[in-house]
Amino acid sequence: MIFDINGALVEFDENKDNYNKVRKDFKFLAKSLEDKFCENLFDTTLNINILSKNSIDLYNKYIDICVRKGVETLIDFKLISIDKNTFKEQYCLKYLNFERFLNNKVKQAIPKGKKNKYLTYKSLNSLVVEFSKYLYDDCFNVHKAVIDSLLSNGVKNISSPISCDDINLSNALFNNYKDGFIHKIDEVKVVSQIISTNPYRIDVYEYLIKEDGDFNKEIEKLVNYLGYDVKEYKENLMDIYIKNIIEQDNCDVEFDKEKVEKYAKYIGCDNESIYTTRIEAIYTFQNV
Image 1 (cartoon, rainbow, N blue to C red):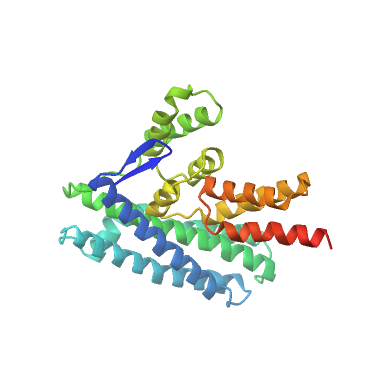
Image 2 (cartoon, one colour; image 1 turned 30 degrees about the vertical axis):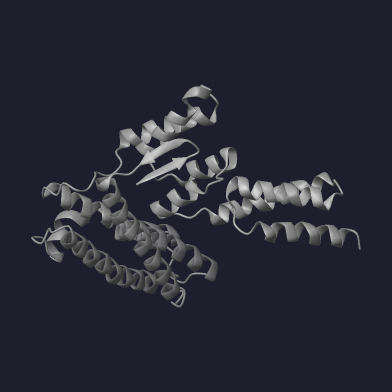
């Protein structure tokens, strides 16, 4: 699969495509379980001991779902010699940190020597949000255990996770690109390298949309392929653009509508008519 990012070609071969699918599946699963985790915990008592117990009970339930998904993924790759117990004990445990993080957070939440174990609703809310992030990380990281299992058992048609060296290289190239240190004739090649070495940085795509546009929506297609979404970001850019237009006070509604249409096409934002209608409404209100 090849994406054309304003002239910079980014290719995902079969191995990278398989890796991305596993990663994306667990990303969506982790987000779904994180949401369920929050919903269940917000109904809990304000007692921190009960909150901790409920959190761990839910965590064990949800991590088992991820472990099961992991084994199903292994079987999809024809690796049938690893069951749930083996997968969890040999491959997953090093990625699972929820209980350690939770216990540390609970100790911090109740000052030493304080007998009252009850929380304010604000404190409860803060802990639930933080615990849910710990849960998300563990559930998502099960995909790393899947990749470890496949690679260590000789499966060839999947790539390795992004290495620290690749992440550092991509970061350095992106920083130099943003700072204007890359020669114009090398920009396309550098953008291709930034994405190819580490495609999982959403801020890279947001920057490219804002600075270089997404006229053909190839960035949006690539982002969706990777398991992210930039629609809301594009909508925020449109809001900022309209605000700037109104502040200039040109008093030419047709001219401003045309500018909004062009900018919407430039960044690849759907339904530009929504934004031109907003311009009309703003001018109408101002002239009442």
